[in-house]
Image 1: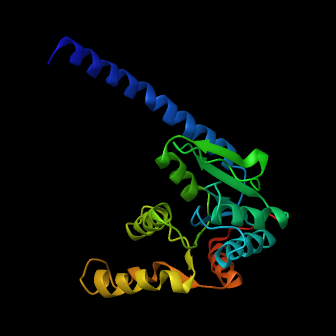
Image 2: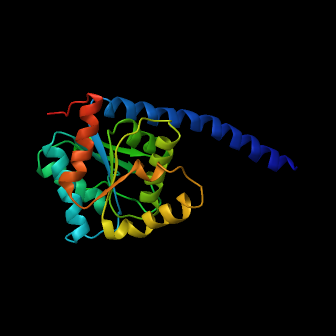
Image 3: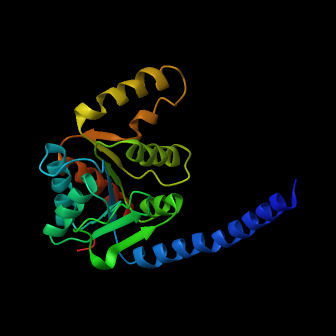
Length: 227
């Protein structure tokens, strides 16, 4: 190893050490700012869903229903389904939270996130912790890799009992049908998951029913809505 290589390696170690403090600062800010929000539900879905489409309007309806029941709505803060859920919450007079992520293509927070509930993270894993820690349930609309990541991480945490069995609701029967068939026909039949693992989520197209699932969980857990 040349002296230049040694210097680069040492510099990288120093950068890694200081990165720990940046990670800690994101956790601290997230805990401080979200710790007072109260009972909340994280809503996930594609950032690429155009306004005015049925899936976008479904997101608006979900955000509105949650706000009307007294739950804060937490999204990734971006466009598409995230914006839709924030829009529904804001227009219903609820609490609208956006956990944005700093990306190379400059994702900007959508206009329906409350100014005092707008957080931007550099590290995905810190942001994902906030979604789980401060939500009483997940409602997952159609989306891409990021949405799948959030969905399967939540199911893994519940499956391995690293977190409480909070409600996970999938919305959009037509979209999720193929994945559910694969879960039951390949994962379950192949012995890769337990017989009760497909019951870790609920499928519905009705916003009222979706929020009912969260309500039942909160009632059983003794968690009261915000207002």
